[in-house]
Image (cartoon, rainbow, N blue to C red):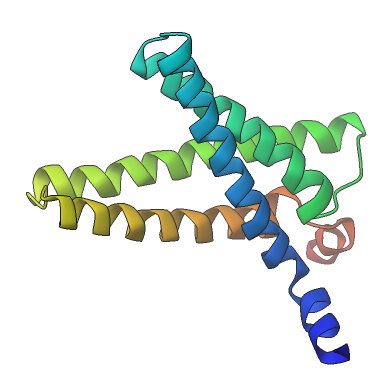
Length: 148
């Protein structure tokens, strides 16, 4: 049991990142469903609002519980918000680029291949988002000091 507890502590940021990532996906899907199907907002607007709500949810959960960034001073908060949203827009564009290249340009537009490439793309995006969050956005103060 002790080894399990040690393993969980050692990998807590990855475990919590995956858990809250799943929750973020639920926020996105539920928001989209409600906006599009219940409130009859257009597809693109529903998608954009659902993405924004999911990114806000992800920022809060990543800041507080995944990477334990408890600082709310103005400089830190502006840096975290700016870099988080910029990174998510960047990885969103990479996702769109991967899907455009594989499905539209390379013609892999069958249900099997489009789903395959969406899964591959999502794995890449999750890894990139985690790395950007850990190494740049929510980096601990001590780690920032070492670089100077």
